[in-house]
Image 1 (cartoon, rainbow, N blue to C red):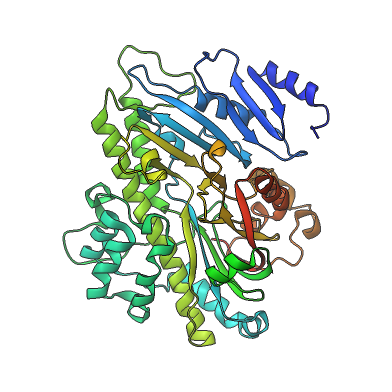
Image 2: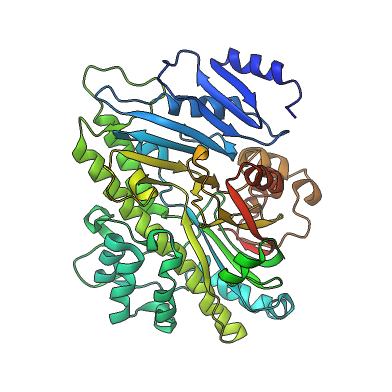
Length: 490
């Protein structure tokens, strides 16, 4: 089956400077003027989904990125939540590069990612004390009642070694709310975090005010949700699809679940913004800027900058892993306070926006590191690896398992993908009904009504089609379906 008026669509895209073809729910796109050695970008998109010329142009520009000193894009694709990005990089992009990296392809929301827990708590028991629980969480997430005080030593370890380093120091000297935490449980859950939540960072690359030589650090950004489509959501396990894996992962129908979508917050903005400028400033003198204004760093001309960027990105990524862990731990502590002792174990934590060596992606540590995979609004989906794909706050979310589809660079979508802008939703919100926005029955906890409208279900593509097309393509398998109960939006 092919889209209606396909030929008319392809002609319209051609007028935009794009060579586009379509087969088996996959669009192939190149710039008209692209050289023969430039790879064709492949976009998996369900029939009936909008094809946005702006997003296609962004992906084709990314495919065309190369460095005059050496370095190119080897392969490029996009997941079904594909849509335009504000910074010129399409959301849902996945690229493999050789002899170069592209800081802009990750952007400033470094290690934006997902985290999921399950709880042995029934929906009726939860709702009986819902108001008390919500008030406590509003205090922690919105009003600053959380106590995430850290020692200078633990902050340095956090940036340097991520979850492993932070936990090692906090075991010696717990601070803030985490005096009440089950630190042995946090330690046992490390293996359920992508790369154990620990990358090769350098605390000296973090914002200076967060890494003093001594004393205590009170970081106002730590354990915060953030804006945009970030959230913390209570869900119920609505349906089990893969009983064997659900049992192995500790998931049962009727359980409550916790899902978190957040990243490295202001640390990512600080590092991502700085390196966007450094990459531009490092461009070869006398060589014309790229038309796309996407500036890569070449391993041939600036190996030290490539190494420094990757370490800076890892520093922000470590903060992102800890941010999600702390958001979950604050909620787990409040659950125990309101509902009594419970384990609420971690299912998995995985990143979206990261650059990873192909050697590490393939677990072949002997491979020479001159190739990288960069994901922007897409997540890794290696064989057997848990994959977390949220819908909107009015639709289902999914716990999946990666199938390791090499054609799509072992990746999957990070959500449903926006189909309408926040500006469009806010403009319409004053006149649209709750039903038109998809907000009927949605329990959204936020301090700003416009956030509820901006993130209304009507803003997003149908999640079921996004899941189905990836299952059909052999990218993921579904383990369980989750239904929203209430959502926190900052």
